[in-house]
Length: 186
Image 1 (cartoon, rainbow, N blue to C red):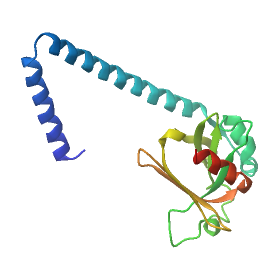
Image 2 (image 1 turned 30 degrees about the vertical axis):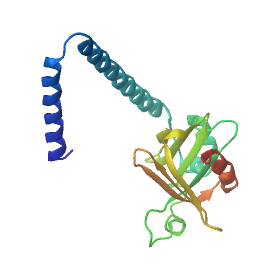
Image 3 (image 1 turned 180 degrees about the vertical axis):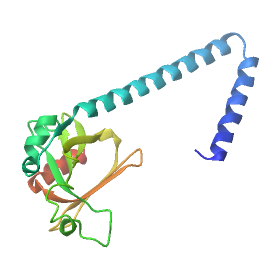
């Protein structure tokens, strides 16, 4: 938050306080009702964010190098895929001058990023320091844009409403790309 944002916030708060002092009767009751509604919405939003973080904390499991070769089993262990088995995996491709598949060839699935779908919720998962875990969740309504590109080497780029972006060159479970595209295009 920049200096101007802080100044704007303080001026806005001061104006609101002076306005509230001048309110009387029905207008004051309506203002207090609206303010209570805003506070309740903020509390609901905060509790939803806390429960989402707690949900992610439960979606982690220790993984060995042998288990990393079959992500399907690990995805089922942490509960981020359902009976439709829709998931794709690949390597991050934000660097434009580097082939992500070749760059990660010797690392095995250690740098694999996985996008999976379970019961209407999308999960982003990865391996790190002997753990396999989901690190972000989102629902279809939070997707701002989605692009699946490439004829031979497919890649996916998903941009969320909060500005976060997920981009990978798809190397694992390529046969589920069309199923994922159908879900994302709804």
